[in-house]
View 1 (cartoon, rainbow, N blue to C red):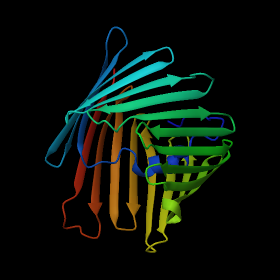
View 2 (view 1 turned 90 degrees about the horizontal axis):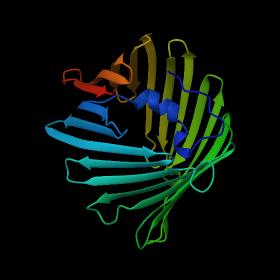
View 3 (view 1 turned 180 degrees about the vertical axis):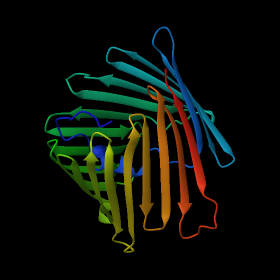
View 4 (view 1 turned 120 degrees about the vertical axis):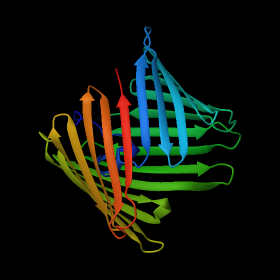
Length: 281
């Protein structure tokens, strides 16, 4: 279902997000299973397992929420534990503070501040090291048009490691986005059109052009609700890769998804099939 209309431009990561979700979200060629349960005191526990080729990856996540504080712990099968502490409206309305670190890594600490306003959104983060990498993403505008920039500076080398800019234009049921990435070495234009809100029917496209080698990558996609609980999606790119999926919400917030991918330029090769089962109480 389409979300509620939001005032304000949103964060930089939301530029072109509608088209990206249409073209890439829920497509996979792995086998994934995830189940979430809640304890009596409200702690959410999520166990997930993913089979990728011959490798099986697993993780256990617990999340605790109390007023405006949220703590998330994720333990992986690679013996790593990621801790994330989030404080909403910390110090001022609309200000969010996020602190994260991974054990046993000693250089994984990150501190991020996010501020969302009706006409601006700012996200500033830095690694908690002696010579931190500082990231700043800013968006100004409204929910109809937004202009943003995303830069990162490495204090150890004195160089900008990232310098991106983006434009998002929303007009009723149409969203057009343009981003310049990799310090101007590539440009991505995307388009999303909601054809029918009743059936969530939408079409979209994304074109990425590389200025360094002149390559173009284009992807077209569409989605449609067969019934209120069953969604189908399909996409095709200029490299001849065709993908499709069907997703059924067999109970509230619980989804079963089957997706497939085939190389139309090499039909003799085996197609790839992905399965996903997500269970929530």
